Image 1 (cartoon, rainbow, N blue to C red):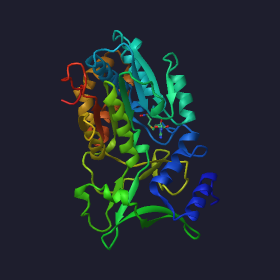
Image 2: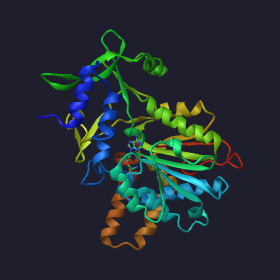
Image 3: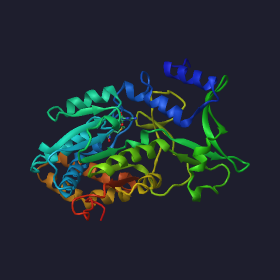
Image 4: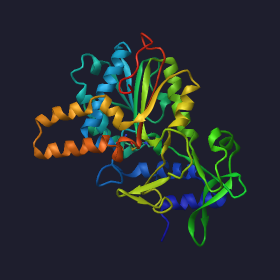
Length: 367
Ligand code: SAH
């Protein structure tokens, strides 16, 4: 099969060096400024490649609205604050959140909506969905307003940031999974010498893993948490991360490609499939704990949403729903909270400043 323009770029880079680390490969495949997956199309929904919680049900964004408004009040209801969403997709979560908080006195006047987004296609969608809310877009955290309280929500954002894979070889040494080009087989995986920094940062209980085991490590994700953490050291506020992943760091290969709502081979149709890996929440907690921040969770998404009253909210909406709407609501609720669906695999982690007004307030949902 002829190579697409991005595959040609990756092949060239693989041949000029010693292959590409999986993280470099993922970065190019997803975020190459011209040909990357996120540059070209809307990946979400049934007609796209994958479906996320806000697209499953309006209940998700509405409940997060209640959560955010509660945190805002615990922060002393500041008159002006940054409400940031990282990777807002189609803007559905922010739109549902905004609708659900309409009647909370002062909240809308105080909230300045900021969106961290790289996809031009999704930016357009977000502008449409959030018309009337005057959002501002950013390519990095650096351009956010300084010196004001901040509430951040990131749903299925971290899983899209690049990950490295280390694998123990038969000699018992950690090596790094690279993507190489082979004239006969095309793109394939090969083990190469691993960056010492990655090996030095392996959790203690992983170091003795047996030969063949894979460990995924994502310094970019930890750095992202640290950068938000630095904001929270200066300003009152909190960040909610929601993603699929594991509570404890563990071995396992979770790197995956999704195309048309089905698993695909990550080395085929490069730039046309979504690439992700599970989030190692222990690594994020570790990053935050070094910074004197308030950490809650991770807990399962199902537990979190139940604690915040999602069942009650669903029952309220059911009262005025027709048969078709009722079926959708119930299906959506089930998918969000049931353990075999998104309820357990998806985790929620909160990282907050330690200087809330009374120093005691914890975010809702974690009890
Ligand atoms: N939160 C949304 C979308 C999840 S998909 C939802 O739940 O429906 C991942 C989102 O992150 C997309 O909006 C994508 O364009 C964005 N994204 C991916 N990598 C990014 C990066 N490096 N910087 C900013 N946004 C990014």
